[in-house]
Image (cartoon, rainbow, N blue to C red; front, side):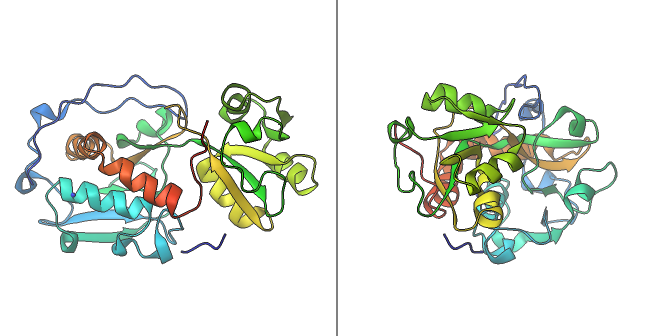
Amino acid sequence: MKKQTSLFLTLVVASALALTGCSKSETTDSAASASCAKADLATVAAGKLTIATGQPAYYPWVLDDKPESGNGFESAVAYAVAKQLGFTADEVTWVRTTFDGAVTPGAKNFDFNLQQFSITADRQKVVDFSSPYYTAPQAIVSYQGSKIEGKTSIADLKSAKLGAAVGTTSLDAIENQIGGKPQVFNDNAAGVSALKNGQIDGLVVDLPTAFYLSGVEIDKGIIVGQLPSTGSGDQFGLLLAKDSALTKCVSAAVDAITKDGTLAAITDKWLATETGAVVLKP
């Protein structure tokens, strides 16, 4: 597969989610006590919303390294949040940061940043996160010409030789969602080697990793499909400066686009339909 590269918000009361581990987080308090009217938002630049992403920003998160286009999953999410906060597209300014630079303590030159930042307890000590905008499902990586290329259902994969790294949710997915007996590897690198050598038909990893492996590590790599989300997995959040005055309102905006279906539509378009990483049927 070739890669290419929405103020007035009714205050939303967001329940605190007790989440732990690298794929879980504790979200911000309710936005009920905060004014989320655009005029009251203390943004980096008055009247503007400054959003950051990586340099470069990759497909399918951003198309052609042009976040201002609104094309790509995270670019589309950014503009949906901006609209919910009351900013028009021409009131959005983009800046670039490194991943490591964004997660370090200190002042920020952006209002929020999105670069597939997993919400973790350690990071929450030095930066803020919005409510999660994405929970990564599991996906199956293979190669063109493999026995499982073109399979569209979980049932079609029950007899396939699938592998995953030890101690991962990917391993659990093979056993509990697919119902097969997995081949276990010390890490994904070992699994990739086994796939290349024909020892397994597919390697199960989280979807973001699947995009990378199929596009970079595996010759003629493909994503056979993604497993239906179980609600567990690595969660991504919009990153803000620690104790940012915007965190509650940004979280409320994410909660709103989640509730009205906007986020689901963006996810389906950019992380399933456009990429060919279809959700496998039962």
